[in-house]
Image (cartoon, rainbow, N blue to C red):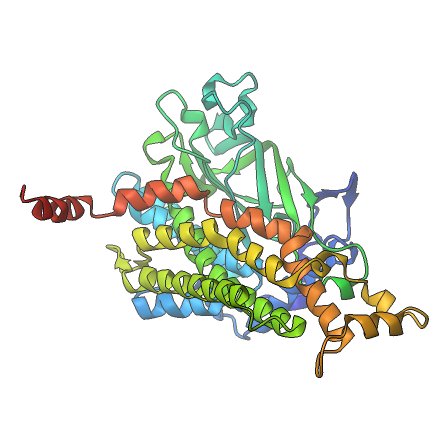
Length: 458
């Protein structure tokens, strides 16, 4: 099949999927205020990547066979919409899992490769459904009062399985085509029904998606970032969904129950670090611009804060570069980024992000959250006063400074900013998971030898 056009993508959303938001079932996603901009962004992506020909496919289906190809993919994804990024990262995570489990489960690895090709040939968009409801966090899946709080197999048939459960925090699920379900954690002996990984179409019977969104409901002029870049967050309900054998990647093999989460974590953390390097530069730019607009750019403590932000942005990018430069090949010839540098870079970028935002807020001042709206600025009676009193010096008009404040608020201190603060920490599995993986892949023996040499105890 050929690649999808924008029109074909829009038509593909009308497939009987069950989508809910604010207490109602949504039938026309492209016209609903919570989904319209997100659908447009994905449609723009289809338009951007479209190539004619029956054998054409998007660059987001590339598999890196060298460090240079890996770098090219990471550079390109910064210009893709979130759903296209998620598709690329998620499918590369599946291939990573296939490489790691091929020796034990060759048939499952082959299914993954065939699924990758199915998505490529049909130009589908995929999201990864990993986080379970989890119930009482003190208890393992099999000891929960309600066994469904971890997604599980409830029936095994000759032609497939039936799964039940819920997956939370799944960005853009409602406007994608495929849900790649995987275990949220390592499962143990006796928890075989919870060791399930599979691919489910969004419109499969039994799938329902409840959505929240940080998309602004007011005038978009006051929300320059989130009005242009927003995605629905899906709460996915799997109500006894049938999955045929060819779409099953794991069904009780607990040894590899964590393989999928670890593989996804690697690619999500690499992509997250790339975006955070970009965000770091953006924060530096906002801080410098508002300091100049306020006339405070030469004050010592402000210069120091901006210098610290420059170091943050630079080290985040350096970690990203190290993860790519130390990429390693698999037996298949695929290149995957360094586990050590990817996790260390993502941990540093995520853990220090809130401090960088605090610096921007300290530099900008209270007008970040109290500046009059653009509608007030345009009002004939009060607008001229706002223009007069928001202006500071030659070249800095009241409108310019007001719009800067709105950009900072929207990007760092409103619904979108709050979403960013949380997702910076939680995307890719959270800080603790990144510390565990970094420690696992760090050369501790070398460090101990250096210390023993220093102490004269070698």
